[in-house]
Length: 228
Image 1 (cartoon, rainbow, N blue to C red):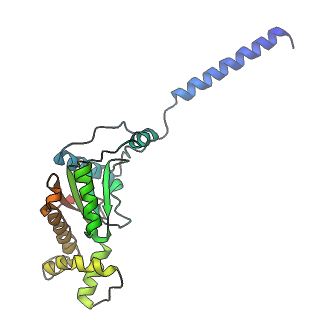
Image 2: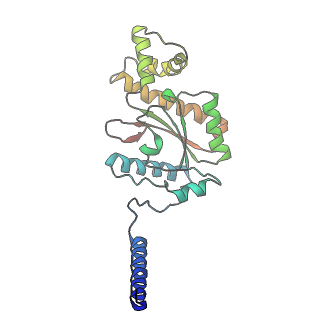
Image 3: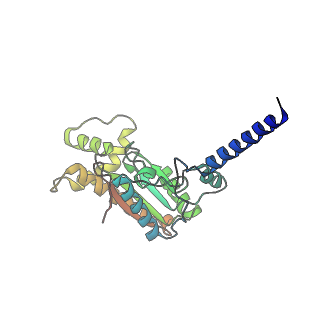
């Protein structure tokens, strides 16, 4: 092959390679993530952030923040979640999705019917005292299976096998308080039990440095409402 032809082919290949590299570098990320933003440092700010994220989730426009590899590498060294969420194990109520949050944003503690025990309280204390989290949110939800089992036991004497008895015994006081009130008994129990868990955490001096709130998640609308 003549030397001038070899030189031409080499130059053309180099130019095409450079053009392809530049195009690849300029191509937009097909799965962009929003840039990280500072976590709220107050309970009011933390609750506002949770509710803003829930509005995005319910509207079908979540941002899916803090999910990239860069975020994962930062969190490998330390974590600074801005809220503790005490929620239910129900597969339809994952707090990170419900509040449109990502890696390192929330410290989630989940038991059926958000029932308290020493392990749950110790976990909340870790978040409040060690991680200095300003907000604890107790999240109940519509059509809770643990609540349904409790009502069935009270209404019909349905047996409660094994370890499930603890759940029913803990939810039973809220169910008894709301029995006979106007409205849906199950939903009244969900609200009353979430408020009771909130008040029990509030009354514990181990959590005095944090604010504690309760909320209810609506499975149909996807919205979270703070309870009075």
